[in-house]
Length: 369
Ligand code: UD1
Image (cartoon, rainbow, N blue to C red; front, top):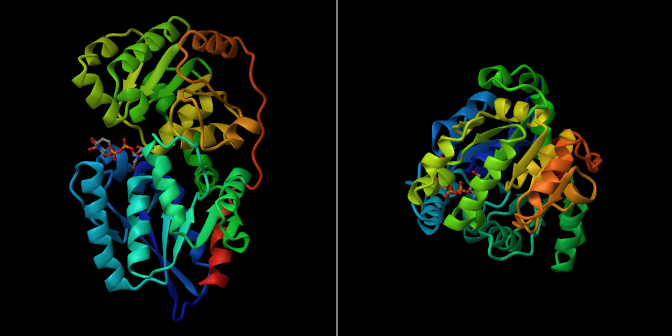
């Protein structure tokens, strides 16, 4: 056991489901770094039992600080997080603030670091979709403008940062902390009972997740999506863990009842991490607009069709098993048919996606802060 003396505190800001999944190994791994300590703050951006609490329970993580911001508009959220976090930073005086990913909590954390003169590290830095209509793209660009330690998951991140004028010596290609979590909880995922709970069989269902504003905020797009689900259901059953934003909009546009009535559809609340990853590992195909699921399916080498015109994670296309299909509904059925008939894109695992990214990040920070 390593005895810690005076340590340098790293405060990690998390707020949403995808953030929690990226920080699970920091407290465990930091135990072997005598000069460093890690505390985690949960901003409260995601607050439901099934969007937040279940993740901390499954990962055995206890947030050291909880800001409990009220639900509201993105501006309300960001303002609330900044106020709460500024107080915390003034009180704790961390050596470094670390933000992850591209959500509103990430941007709020980056601004607070800048305004309190606290050095900033960004995990999953440099990703770009080059689509400024995505709220996450703006969060990524602004966060990287304020960052001193850039930790990137793939080659494109490195190149994007260099072309934006960031200094090579501040950029570290370390791999993907989201994959660290998949590797660390491999056994719990394999043992999960979700398939029998839902009554579906391995390789005999399509897994679907949709929540991005570009799709779910428009009634016509949601209607097209329901048509697609109906079509897929003629081939296989569909498991659809539904995001709160998607449900709210289906109700608002009067489409919810139509969805619920579809035979063969397994509509569930957002699922815990182990169940969801078990569904990824055993499905025949994933249809998604998520960022992280493109990476998880690449690591597990499962076919993934991303219902977007672009991706900020191009390695999942160039090396991985992911394919982009924009919302051209005339080509999507043929593509799905081909995959369900066994015409699979061969993918492999990108460099450094090996379960050790957290270790590499802390090795860099041990020397730099
Ligand atoms: C956020 C992230 C997105 C990420 C997604 C994953 C931003 C800009 N977007 O989008 O990058 O992929 O999380 O989930 O930060 N809500 C609940 N319960 C919750 C959380 C949210 O009911 O636990 C409601 C909110 O009140 C809001 C809606 O769901 O009405 C959307 O939540 P919000 O956190 O604003 O953004 P997401 O769409 O989830």
